[in-house]
Image (cartoon, rainbow over the protein chains, first blue to last red):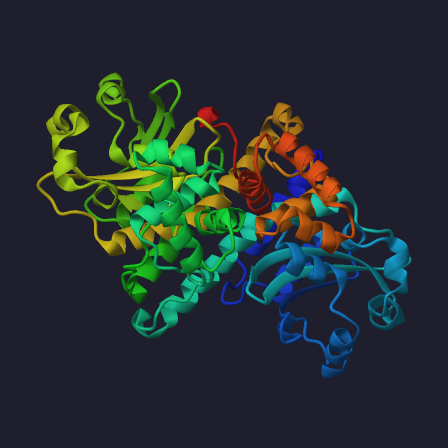
Length: 255
Length: 272
């Protein structure tokens, strides 16, 4: 996808606009309004949901309790299903994860979106930790077209900046906390696992897609020892196999 | 790396980081790490000499170093690569781990003191302790922020390491913004949007790679998506080909780097 100059300028403009906004909240109304100027839509919101308990933990702007109850009675929407099934957080449209015909037949569409005139959805996954899913959601009515690939890519490009904004809000909160006496609990600490240095090293190599034999050669140990270390890693991390461990390793180092 | 021993940062440390972010936000974005930014880093970790450094691992040289005074030239770079590289560099190229690490986190001090890189390069230069933060780079390259202290001083503390680690998301955002600016300045760059490794995958391929990354077998995936295991296999093969990898673990890691950090990872660093 090739973005035009105007798109790059619009992204930089958005970043400049939100730079000086109050940082105690990562997604106040002003940020959402700037987002709407960047990607035109009829509604935009930040949401945190507990997919297991089927409820919203937080959203901005606020929704009525009736709306929330309705949402979970007919939902969750196919995008949340897609997130929890795959763990993929990339910006996606409703039309990317479900066929048009099927979507129009879903209770989610017929009872939740359609009555208020909404149709198209574009969603940027911010985090998925256990059952807790956070995202930015953009909505458009029937009369406007679906979000374009440009819209999707522009939204995806905001990711590192939004992450930095969240991290900055987290720093502010921790600075306010009673001299940091409480244990730090940033998002990146959620998956802290006590691995030995060797286990970490091997996990990183698995994350790069290396085989046990390759790892053994590099570290001057036997493939059997590598296997043993990995079994400990799987157990501590709570995953079933090396692909899942590799994903975990990526989240740790990328995170 | 080891955050198991996470130090307790105080509000002063958080304030210092917020101060660093506030004073570097207005700095020129033409390069992500101008010397003014390096000068601010020196305030964050006291009594240390900070340096931005790019290592060409294939050519075994460090073509770019920037310190608080500007571009830094090392006359002994050839010697460094002959007797080195330093243990942190080796650790990073072996593991791919980018988290903040001290020299003493990756090598036993005794062993380091006996290594040629210490005896012939760091020792004579008076350098003792090091603390280093890895930055994302394209294959064959390494980019880091390196802090050095003289031999007679003390090692970096857990606090120093943890403070540095907390800069990661902000530095990545700065790099992404700088890359946007450079793309605007340099039209030629606008075309090669190769930064998103997953961009060329179809949604079906992406979905299957992510399911595989969750530890699911081809049979599991087939059952879930109502397709045959043969089709799953075919989709995965196509995805491997596009991502330039040979197995599911590697595909998963390529894709999660590509999609989550699409806009800052993987730019060739030689332009600085």
